[in-house]
Structure formats: structure tokens, C-alpha cells
Length: 143
View (cartoon, rainbow, N blue to C red):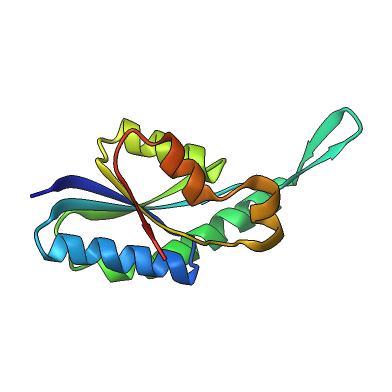
């Protein structure tokens, strides 16, 4: 067994679906024992002058519900695997993925090369690039 615990970043994009399928294949081929699919969401906020204004609780619940629905698809795909689960994290995607991996004994991160992309990637940087640069474990980036 090459890896004991794979952490898969999942955001519903085609690249993350491919990453999940690759991780599932590793488990099915006995190259890994355990898989955790993580989805990171962040509640939007607005900066007005010197203040930060968060959105109402109802909107925060709505974002969490959307994250749960998104992760339900991944949960279905891994349901046949013996040691598989899903986790919803909140915060900066790269930081949350790295922190979860470190705290939970992940020894491989599988992530898609392109997620939401576009302007968001230009402004914030690529999540997969940040994860690869800062991870203390191997990172498999799927195109």
C-alpha cells in the first residue's frame, strides 16, 4: 500500500471530478487504504471603509446547504469504498486543505488543476498551485 490516507479536494468542477475518480481508482487498486473528500466553502463578506461586514446568518446557512448538496454527489461515488468519508471545511481553500491533511494524517493530496478559475483565480491565485507549494506530503494534480 503506497498511501494510507488520500485527501481529495472537491469543488464540483470537472477537474475535481477527475481528481476524485483518480483517488477512487487508487483505493480500488489497493494503492491507498482510506479516502476523505473535502469541500471548502467560504462565506462572502464585504469590506466597507475600515469595517468588515459579514452576511446574515440565513445566507451563511444557505452557503452551507449548497456545500452539503455539492458534497452529496461525491459521497455517492465513494459509498462503496470501505474507509471513505466526506468533510466540509470553511475558510481559504488551500489553507483549509493543507490544515486538514496535516491534522488528520493525510499522506497524499489529490486535487484538480482548475476549479472555479477565471477572475477569481487571477485575483486569489490557483488553489492547486498553493497546495502544491506548501504541502508537506505529495500532491497529485489532475488535469
